[in-house]
Image (cartoon, helix red, strand yellow):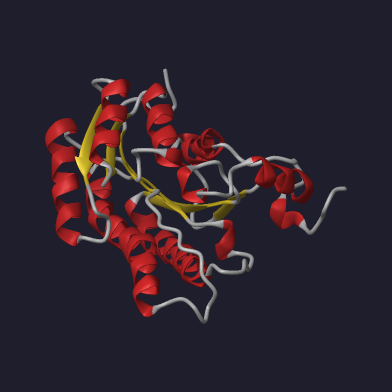
Length: 251
């Protein structure tokens, strides 16, 4: 029996990257998964590949009405909702002085508002199912400063703050809320920071000497969604190859 047998989990940003790997792993562990994204063709393909245990829904996480529609489709298809992974994210790189108001709002709309709307929409349904889990994707950047990431760091720090408050408020309803703080992970969000030159930098900079893989973050999401973490809530979990342990630069 899988670690998520009989559970229904909605995962945002599930068309690719970490969200896709979470959806595949959760389904392999017995869950029925609702894949939510704005990349409809890719999301449909992933859900189709997973099979009968998967449903794809279009969801712009910054739109409250679309959240309502997404959870209604989850209930129609699977009858309940036991978990949520707020994985959808947006990265824009710019200096503080070059970050426009529009860019700042755009990033916070997805990363911060999207997480808030997801928790607020899903939590009552998770409580109705007898309790469950919410996992929010924060970031290494929420804990340690990185240049050119003002909007992203601000939004992810807000995710950590909301995670802690939600854990306090939802614990009595049987809902555990935790956050993942990935470092450098090999996903499309990285853009040009994925080639041979970047790999050499990661080899020198990170204690484990390599970029992270989305499957490794998915395994953390599984831990936080399963009963393996039954006494854990309100916590940030760093998955960064040792980056935050300290500074280094190999020859």
